[in-house]
Amino acid sequence: ADETRNADACAVLVPRACPRVGVPLRSRARMRACAGAGVAAKSMAALGHGGVVGSEAELGSLDFAALAALEPGADAGVADFVGPVTVQDVEGKGRGLVAIREVAAGEVLFLNKAFSVAKSGSLLDATVRKLERCSDQAHAAFFLLCGEGGRTPPTLPSLTAPAGEFRTCSGARPKRSVDRKAVNDILEANAHQLDTSDLVLTGLRPGSSVARSGLFPVGSLVNHSCRPTAIRAIFGDTMLVRAARDMRMGEEVTDSYVSVLHPSFERQQMLQDRFGFSVADDRALLEDALMPEARVRPLLERLDSAERTEDFKKVWAEAEELTWQAVRRLGGDASPSSSSSSMASAPAPSAAACEAAMRLAPGVEPLLRGSLVAASVVLAASLAAEGRHGEAARAYSKCCEAMEEAAPHNAYHVGWALEALREAKRGRLELAPFLRYARKVFCGHYGPGVLEALLAKDGEVTSADVAAAPGAELAPPGSLPVRVVRRAEEGEVVVEVEVGDVPADQLSMEVCRLAVLVHAGAARVAVVLPCPVAAEGAAPVALVRRGGRRVLRAVLREIVSELAARGFPHGCLG
Image 1 (cartoon, rainbow, N blue to C red):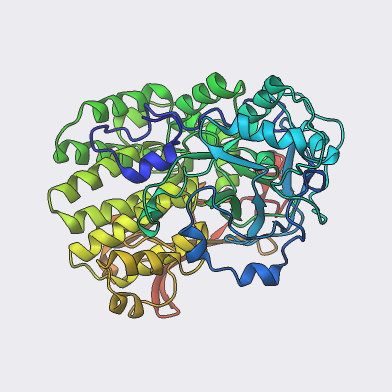
Image 2 (cartoon, one colour):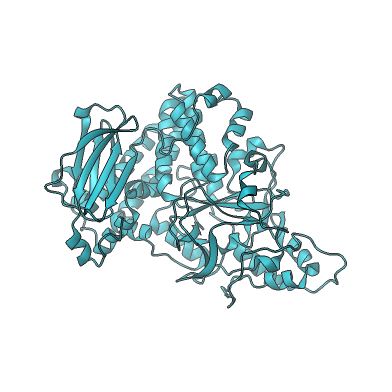
């Protein structure tokens, strides 16, 4: 695969010749190479971006469909915008961006025009030419960026951009000498590809796209996470970064430097080989404990050797069972007869793994499936190729379930939501849920109006279809949406699972110490809890209606003494 395209882009294409989507591909083309210290900071003021910082009012008036149709590198005509973020030192990473208040999923964190843009392979020359004649202030600010050595400047920059030059060089200024090697080191550590996360929109663009690269000063501040909090999209020469999920005040803005769909042991190896660091975050800790390499690798090897649709289906069924039993084992107090023999022989999860699971609650099961979702991607593509469109739509929805936890609204997610919609149309399924869900994902990645513009040009999903399905759907079609609320003062945890029109006699809920296991007909969901609960003596499960939807509801009693023994103050995990 062309190394100028990252795994996000390749996954949208769903290469049928390679079962494990993205495994042999390079997730990034040397975007950042700062070992351990994170990505160095920049002064936007000194770099002279955008004459006036964009306001929230101006942000609301943007035509995202028109922006999405721009060729990579084209002038977006948009001023820089800095939202609810600031730059500060992040423990163990160096400099990064953090939220200065609570942020809702989908909120714009920043818009950042590129300091320099060029065809891939020519960015060094373009950047040197600018540096030869840019202002002294912009020149000095550029060399505050870290290079491959991970050098971190001692001064934190300002994200406020006063009036100044943007991507212009004054011919009147004397030409200065520029250290090409130092510039190259900075670009190797900080440059982004401009056309890697939005291939799904090529139908909106005239002609063929040319791969281009750019240096985004603020975008370069975003550090790595295997469960990122932000999502980026490129509009011409401008990077738009939104919150991928709700964020707390002080929480870090993160992106993933490698594909989030690899299992932990592969992600760790890629990060170490390419960027010189490893991670020990909650997701990695939990995967290593519940789905170690010895259990996951054989399954992936079977996927690599599979050739027929039915083989892909068996591997995906194994992947779902593996993650279900992993959460069941994590939950504790489950019936031994329900566990597979392999899981029954596995050691109990450590206290550290349980604590990580509580912090990641309630969506641990789909998060674990995210490391194996390549099986569902290839299954969906194979079903579509055989004309089994309804099944393909449901398989793509399964992919979306995993992405909701691993990296909501990223390019994988956009592509799969769109394919699920198209396959649902071809399979004559009820279209409205698929359309409303695709709209939610597209808005979270790009902004409003982009999906509608793409469908209008494509024509397969008609304007009448679009008009018949207003609004957005938060959960993928066919899933069992979950809501967990911890009432710390009352010492209770409320679990609600939407069950659609499944008959009452096909519904069941099993309460474990750290998880609730729900069956609704052929569907099932394992809900990890934010604190331990008493598995015995729970109040009866109720079937109620919430806003016209049938919901299975349980009120559970938390075990406060166990939380205290683990060092968690009462109410801290709510």
